[in-house]
Image 1: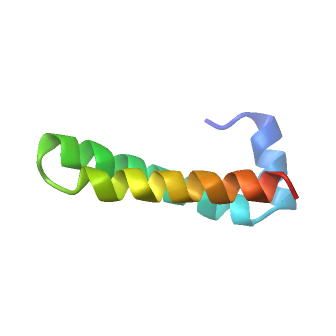
Image 2 (image 1 turned 30 degrees about the horizontal axis):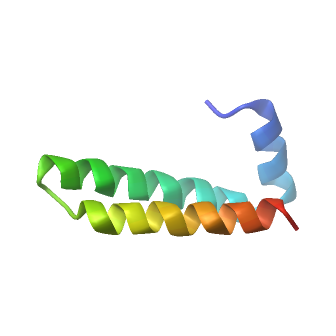
Length: 60
């Protein structure tokens, strides 16, 4: 569950929903890569990219 404050921010800034889903996708790829199913490096890059984008969205 996300905190209420984050849910309010998602309503104000719809891009944060994409940030949340992109970060979760990166996490899944990283874990899958650690197990040997996917690419952990790609997962880390996706998480970092969406994290940076979320930081920029929040600091507007």
